[in-house]
Image (cartoon, rainbow over all chains, first blue to last red; front, side):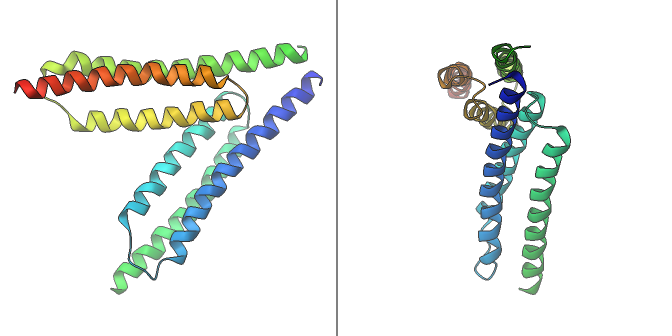
Length: 98
Length: 98
């Protein structure tokens, strides 16, 4: 492979890996959303926060290592944060109803 | 730059970034070691654990992205874990003396 091809390959691989990890957190959020009817589990939120922290460190590293653009990194984190905020809002509303 | 040069550059950059982050945790461990005489701060351990987790996610990503060898990643983590274990041992001995 030529120099630009190697770079494109590494960048694409990095984006796919990060997207894969983001999807796992997305799935955790979805599962918790579906389980709103059942009792709230504080440990679940703890797990989600920890996963988000770990993921943000991965993204930060990928940006610093020059594998992805800073804007792309911010976009992928923002999307997850919005979904997480929706989950917490739904949890709040539920606890107010009780 | 030719294709191998680009790769070597990216690998070196990744290793330097990880070493830099490892040094920050190392510094946190040293500071706590020096402060053994003062009162134990549980939050400090919490911070160290969180930093270790975040760092292990960075290393894991770097390995998966093909930036560093798995063995190099394991070595850098093991070194930190040994130092952390020494700190906890020293903290334990101190609390037994009180």
